[in-house]
Length: 189
Image 1 (tube, rainbow, N blue to C red):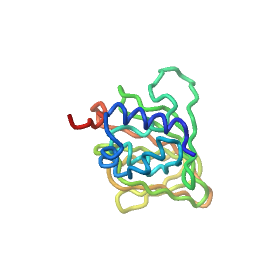
Image 2: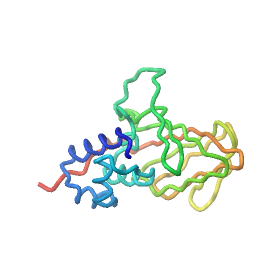
Image 3: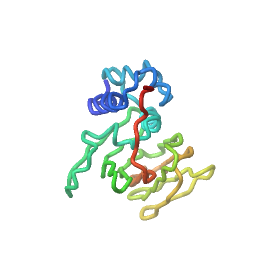
Image 4: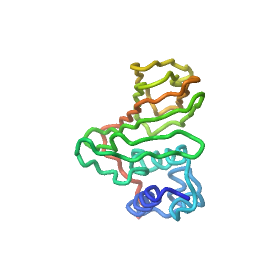
């Protein structure tokens, strides 16, 4: 079963864009059947599928996974954790803030776990800051080793990845989007 927030957010995004399921499938690269299953709460999408949807609609990831993706500006607010089946655990630290053009996640990797990510939307930059354990970040074709207290910034509009050592790892993952306000694709008029 799909997370209810993802279901509701995807329905709202598609309704706002005025796109049919077929057209949404074209702009995201996710099949019409899968989009329909997510909207009906019949399927749990992978993080890779959610990134394809976010990229197709030119939106940040928290637009799909946050319970309320509008920042409240309150300090100390606790945001949700999303466990993607067979993949990484992502806790929203700061949902997307349009004024900053950024969102921040706390990501956990089990010992020996790796996660490869397809290219995000054009102009997206990521920053990784290791909190615990040791890990490597795939930037370009090179794996860069990082220890606690070390960070790395890289262009995320190309394939990239993360992998932990035998100890596992936890890191902050910041996504910075182009300063332009995200715009939903619109249905042909």
